[in-house]
Image (cartoon, rainbow over all chains, first blue to last red; front, side, top):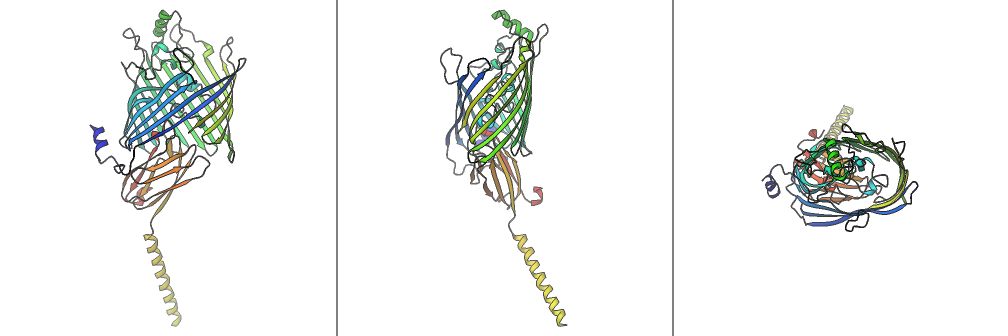
Amino acid sequence: MALAVALGGAPAWAQDSKDGDDHQPQTRLSGYMDFHYNKLESADGRLDFHRFVLLVTHEFSPKIRFVGELELEHAFVAGLEEGGELELEQAYVDFLLSRGFNVRAGMLLMPIGILNERHEPPVYYGVERTFVDTVIVPTTWFEVGAGIHGEVGHGWRYRLFVTSPLNALEFSADEGIRGGRQMGSETNIGRAALTGRAEYVGIRGLTAGVSFWTGKSGFELRPRFDVPVHLIEADARYTHDRLELRGQIAGVTIDNAAQLNDAIARTTGVDPNIASGLRGAYAEASYRVIEGQRWGDVGVFARYENFDTQYRMPAGALPIVAFDRDAWVIGANYWPEPDIAIKVDYVMVRNQSSVVRAPNALNVGLGWWF
Amino acid sequence: MSRMYTWMTGLAIAAALAAVSVRAQSQAPAEQTVEVTAERFAFQPSEIKVAVGTTLTVVLKSDDTTHGFRIKGEGVNVQIPKRGRGTVTATFTPAKAGKYTFECSRVCGAGHGFMRGTIVVVERESETK
């Protein structure tokens, strides 16, 4: 009812009631792509067209808009092929009702961290995304659902979505909850998950936010037991002239992890050693050493990451210390123009194992946005 | 005596000029300039306060790609050049109090839909502080 009134009439709180003038429905195509060269220590290098993403947007009216994002990962998809993925990362309709209250429904990006919603290649340093945004926050994290978003004034804004939960049977020791994403494919919504973010952009150059995700993810294990999962995250990004600082911390708890391990072991014969707690954090500093030249800009960066997908173990389980890792990543971006980035970095990973050594890596990438 | 007349005439002319000047100042349209930075996916500042009748000049620059700046329903829509390519200016003179939404009018990435802000138009200039 409220939706119908807001879209059809001109209630007092719908401040932009003059929107209707000279509006023409518009459809636009944009996108981003990147391909990488990855050379692990003591292994042959790999050249991978990592992402080919097309965004289609359409304005039905000034208050109703569609956004779709179709992503082809690793260039190739075939039946039972593990190498490639064709993903519908976003496909939602936004009902823009007022400054503080808007409704969104469809395939949604989870509003968690810096990179899950802001991942166009030219806007971040490093060829690959951060480890924390891979094994703690499983970017790109998208699910079907619906929710609200808006601005509440003084630089504060929010999003709050109800979505499909994770599938706990797909969790793992080394990548945490990443495998559990249902990705909108005939998802189980028996017990919906809730996610949200509060973000502050009220100081020039600063974007800071806190996010959460909570959901019961044991739908394949009920009614014997359930697997409640909770994620909490905080991040900040500050830019001043050529300097940029960013940091993020995230933690995940998985309840009933002992029962989950036992259930999976009974099915597969292998104990997956899923942890009851994961945590990760990183800090990054970057500086544009060359800016404003006719031939482009150059920036350098250094990042430290600490991430442990075996941080807390259920009773009776021991952590696999090879998954308690930290990494230094150093490198540079060259922007021949602001929407194209040529990247190079060197990754030094260490873990707590005295037996399994984590290899260092050299990465080179080219990414662009149009 | 004549010197006194000269002084009094001079003072009268000065007072008249000052009065005209004050009157002219009070009648001059008020102006306000705000610098706004656009980047994926926010305007900073995202809230601007201005008084009715004031000519608001928004000087826009981008920290990354090309963005747009549209004040919904007001016929203001400019394209903000990419980082390092300079600034663009948009002007807006609100005729009545209220809240006016501005937004990015050029698709700039996955979070483009969040890139919005508000111009709060108040009755008196004192309320903008």
